[in-house]
Length: 125
Image (tube, rainbow, N blue to C red; front, side):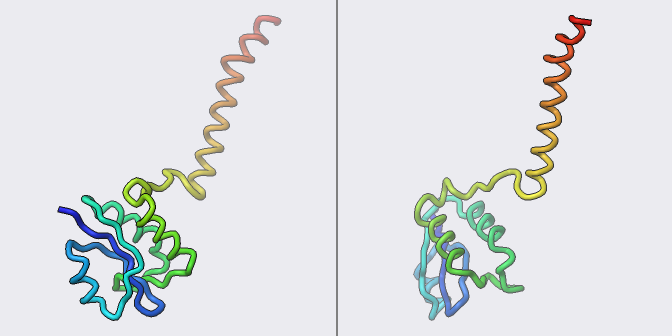
């Protein structure tokens, strides 16, 4: 059954969630205004990713978020443009990306020296 992943604005707060009945949710969250929504068969991965992206903006104990205009536009684009295919995040980011890059660089350098340079140098000695 198709579900709706939605972004509803209520004043300066935004509600990110999913439902099977969008009209009923709009009535329940009145006077909120529907900003964007996406119809999908599997809403859980997308909603989980959206909530993870905006976890720092979440109001404790609720589904409401205090989002900046750029974040609202980003969320809208995730829902409207290509929401189902666009919810994957990079595997490495931040310090993990840096450590992975340095480790890979050192490993490749070692392999080049060991298997390319070392045989040439041993041939001439």
